[in-house]
Length: 226
Image 1: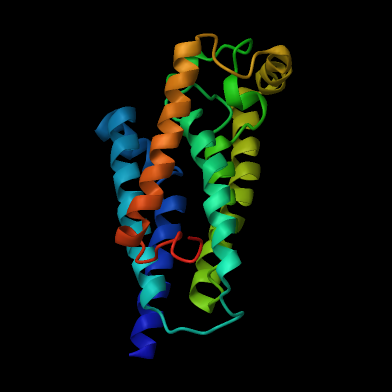
Image 2: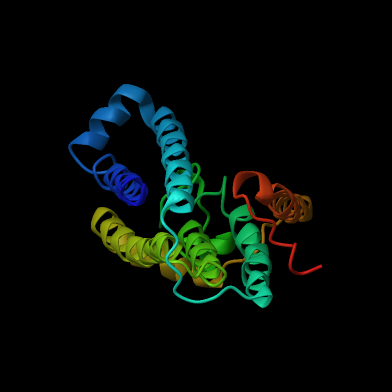
């Protein structure tokens, strides 16, 4: 039983990282994009990633429990508080142009005078992943979850450097020029309605995550707080 638990965890990890290395590099990615088209590839890859992530989280939960540090009620405050900026970062980055990282939408429309959150961070989705994973290490002091969330944190940091290197190679001098142009740009979108909608989306997602966390993660983050 113990060996099966670790075997499943290791297998899930191997598939997750293989999908994030093999499928996004030549020669595999160009073939898939040509067959599925860019939008279809992004959608299929996102669904695949979510499915493997779900498997990985379930495998970590089922792995043998090896305590590294004891749980304490205050530890739940760390992810509960951290997830608010995570939701804000995602709300102001998803669906927006970002030629500096992955996940950008219609990058040809990127305006360096209105770069939005990209002015503060070139890789907002990876920053959100880093905050999420780092915060969740604190209340999960067992070996499987420390490996899980620690790997995601390292994956996020390494991803930023790898993407920067690739984008600079692809864009040449234009990468640095575009980066300098956006330094004087506005952080928030010009339309107040758009700003309010994204704030509302962040708040809604945050509340949903709190309410549904016992369902998809099996843990109520508010149980020890109230």
